[in-house]
Amino acid sequence: MKIEDVKTVGIYCRVSTGKQENANQLDQLQEFCAKQGWRIVAEYVDTVSGSGKLKRPQFDRMLLAASQRQFDLLLFWKLDRLSREGVRKTLRYLELLDSYGVAWRSYMEPFFDSCGIMRDVVISIMATLAEQERINISDRTRAGLERAVRAGKTLGRREVPVDLVRVGKMREEGLGLRGVAKKLKISVGTLQKAIHR
Image 1: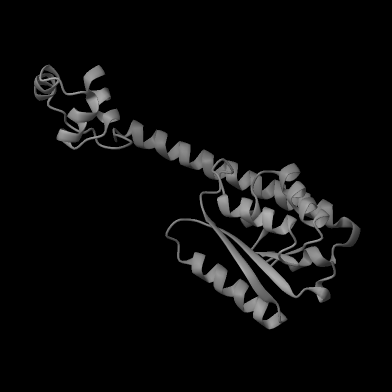
Image 2: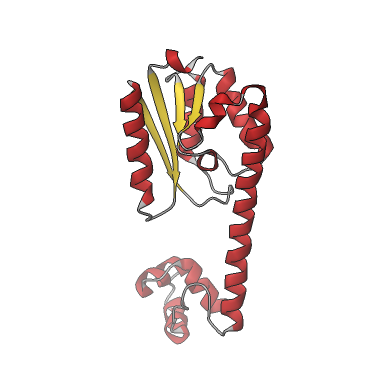
């Protein structure tokens, strides 16, 4: 489909929890559609990290809607907002959209429209850079956690104190693990960890 034939648009955003630019991203995409005279028929917003490992239910809904031709064009902020899963997967998603007859556009990377036969090469390079950034973020996070452990910080949730004597008495009275956990107002998992420590 040619961009000039677009009438309806689906917007896809992948945003990070609690960041100010999340609202800005969606606002600018909506404003862009208004200027083009495009009608937004659906907005799909996933709030996840960029690891590529977490489920993206709105992404899956968007692909299903695209396969049903519920919109003419998918608009996303930037290629790395669509996918950081590497070249093959990113290209596969774009090829899927093409096969459904749904055009796509990156708001921050309008040069994709003018790449001609080099478009797949440019997309491959951009997808590689996005995947590398995801790896770099993961490496920096791991290094930060290791540094914190070396500095003596305890990672994870604080341990919940459990009175094992009280637990023993409740068990003698015939209460099961769920009943004991409920009385102590803790999870069964926390209770089991305390018992098996």
